[in-house]
Length: 68
Image 1 (tube, rainbow, N blue to C red):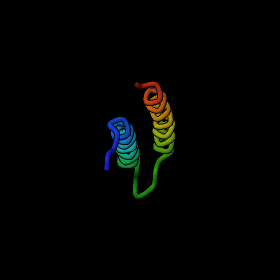
Image 2: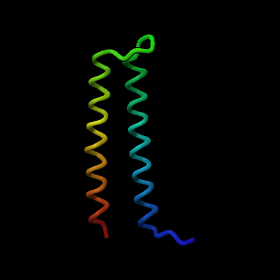
Image 3: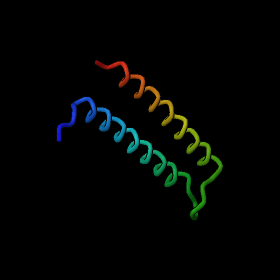
């Protein structure tokens, strides 16, 4: 089975971005979590992580679409 190099790069970059997002959410949970609950500041941090993930994935998609 032949997989084009471009497809492997796209999958790798997307996978790496998702791993960074998961690490960010876990980091927020351990930093702002107390007794299994997330503080108000932690909620805002998770919201910021989601917003940053959306921006990063948009930029990655834009970059990948214009590569040759």
